[in-house]
Image 1 (cartoon, rainbow, N blue to C red):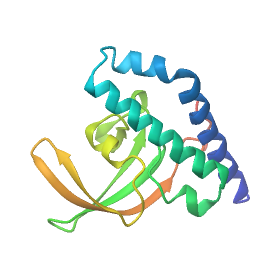
Image 2 (cartoon, helix red, strand yellow):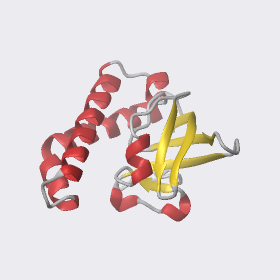
Image 3 (cartoon, one colour):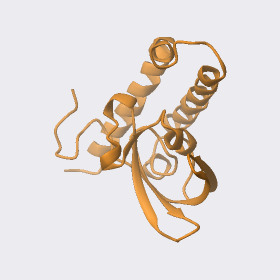
Image 4 (spheres, rainbow, N blue to C red):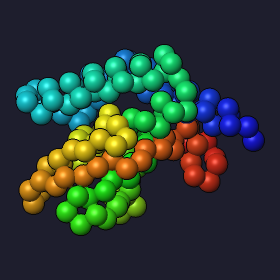
Length: 154
């Protein structure tokens, strides 16, 4: 299998995300944040920034750029500054979240804080018990429209 096939699948998936948020953003927000307020406005801004990041990646699409920013569908490895341990999360749509398998929704508190971060970036994450400093060790876009077993979603 050529390298370009998975890359093409990844680009197709990102284009689908762009179309989805263009056409369904209001319905998405209505579903997850039915009340207008600070939380909904914050997620609206997050999605606008995310769409801008997607547009930049798709406009000059290459493998390096694809794996340099945390996207919906990225597996991100973070290193905790306090104990130097590493953990990986896959950022997914809310209906695909499986926290026990480290698949977290981009709408989760940690997911929202990781979305659009870049490799080697250091950030402070707000968590229920306070704040923790982490470094983004690596990012790998893993959802090119295929499951890990190679079959297509849907």
